[in-house]
Amino acid sequence: MSASSTLESVKAYYGKVLSSNKDLQTSACCTAEAMPPHLRELLKDVHEEVQDKFYGCGSPIPSELEGRTVLDLGSGSGRDCYLLSRLVGARGRVIGVDMTAEQLEVARRHVGWHTAKYGYATPNVEFKQGYIEDLEGAGVASSSIDVVVSNCVVNLSPDKRRVFSEVLRVLKPGGELIFSDVFADRRLADAHRKDPVLLGECLGGALYMEDFRRTLLELGCRDYRVVSSSPLALGNADIERKVGNVTFTSRTIRAFKLDLEDRCEDYGQVAWYQGTIPEAPHGFVLDDHHHFKTGQPHLVCSNTAAMLADTRYARHFKVLGDTSTHYGLFDCTPEDQAAPSSGACC
Image 1 (tube, one colour):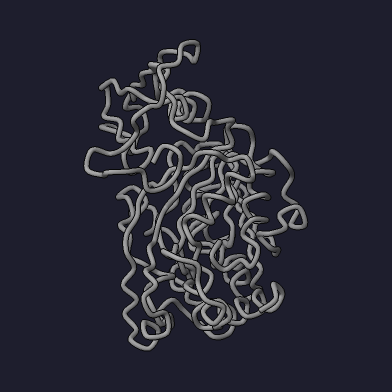
Image 2 (tube, rainbow, N blue to C red; image 1 turned 90 degrees about the vertical axis):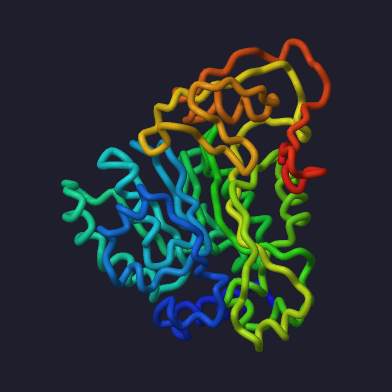
């Protein structure tokens, strides 16, 4: 299936086949990953139609967003954009990019409703029709975005390398990509990748983890972190027969636009979380094996030190040490795992 055919198939599925998330045939595009309590509270103020037509597989909305510019790739009906609208505040800006006219119509219809609900004088959300492979064509300038988020959309793209290339172009230095998506434990067969239902259900285009790692490495992003991961139970016997022994997983991943090393290196650095993020007074989770308890010192590799000290999280951490003396590789493996399973420090 050509790239244009894939995009048209996905447009048709989300614009015409599905009328709400209740029409999905599997749980892949709408998994029940627990939303943090502070976001669940904000969700109460998001319009019912926006929620009803939302499709996602995680909760890729990070902390420390006040006054920031955030880009949502494949924003759909706008649910995450409206959550982000509250988090960035009146001084911040949220841009949603989506290619499906029907989804954009829903999102745009409720801009005024949410602006009034949140008490803003003017809207801080804008929805653009375009392709996540061509953010320049959608009018997103280079080095203009603080945070890029995406919720179960990258798998739908026929050119994932270009998506990640565009993300790194539009992010400011030190900016963050955080996205939730469906991953597969192997490269999928052509029949899977061409099946319009599997594509629309976020399975046919699922990323193979090793290809994802290689793509980021080729683009100069040498370290990424898995924030959370959970197996997908498809709940559809016909589709389970189609995919056979392929195992699918929903993962939330973050990466930063930083000059990092491709391995975890030890320079004797130490980091303390100050407990100053309102929704995280007792600890901060960087990834699935870096949970910084408030006030407790943690030995960190140089990549982790940079993620904390050279990004918007810097004011919430105290990081001591530099890279003048090298002590070899840093053991960044979780105690209950025999070997790393993903990015350089994972």
